[in-house]
Image 1: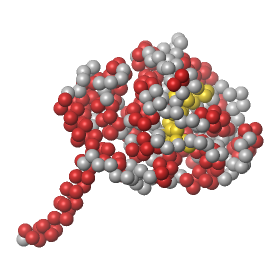
Image 2: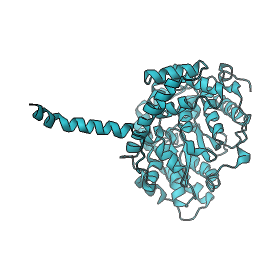
Image 3: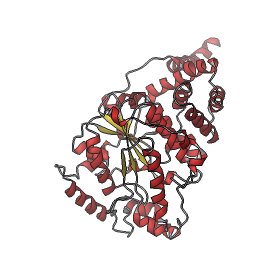
Length: 418
């Protein structure tokens, strides 16, 4: 009977023990190949966002991250990944963002990108993040990486104390619940205390080791592959780069693909998301306000993470479709005041490289749908990225940031005078 039981359950037990040993043993396997990095760079896979291995490997190669949210999936011919491939940029974009990712998620993401130190990055800011309640709890918890959280906890004795306390409090406020030891450690940080030796030992040698092994083994397995989409988009571009000609081509393509509505919204998006309920949006945004939001504080936490790693950042303020603004009745002052406030927060601390696409003269076809860059919007950004991507190393003269804890306060979150 014992022999039969062993024959039945023995292989399962051996396999389970082997898997546990594999996950708990701090051994690195060579799973990150150049081909995997290239695939990951445009995959927009959540495992890439929540992982660390492939992103840090990319920082050793010719990639510069573009960090944002849902706009990154709008892969038309003028998308930076298409342009970089067609016109042979020295460094290629590594896309990090999904619908629902906002400042605090990306703060944890940047904190985990240890090889980003003294390098460059691009960060796309979306006005619609800055709502009265800020990032939804469910979205934040969905995109939060337990591994990145463990890294934050272990590094909490370093850096800006007020920022660490804020991030811990905010994570707890948004409902983060990991293991009991991680939760207790996070609470101590939020209270201004150091984590205990026991907490540090457990999180470092058990929690983080296991998560790192999982990331190493499975972080690049069966990734989304958008290379065919990028190839198709790039094939529609002329062989020689000429901005004026490309601008005309972008307008021509946009007109062709948005001719079934008068809002300059891509037809496929319009049919799928708006056509049957478009009337509901008429004058629906008359009271939109982007000036009162905890997102400003979350954004400040992100800035601290960039500062700690001496990252030279190009910030992009994303435009909103002007025809959509008019149709929904959104006051122009809503976007104008948001633009002024976020620019003040950046420039007053030394983050001066800002590509502001909210105030361009010709806004036709600047967005592919209601609130995301596309066509001419991407092309306008590409014009700035083209030179930025020539060298991935940060210019030290551009990373003299003077951080101000005032931007972590409720007073700033609700401030309308700046």
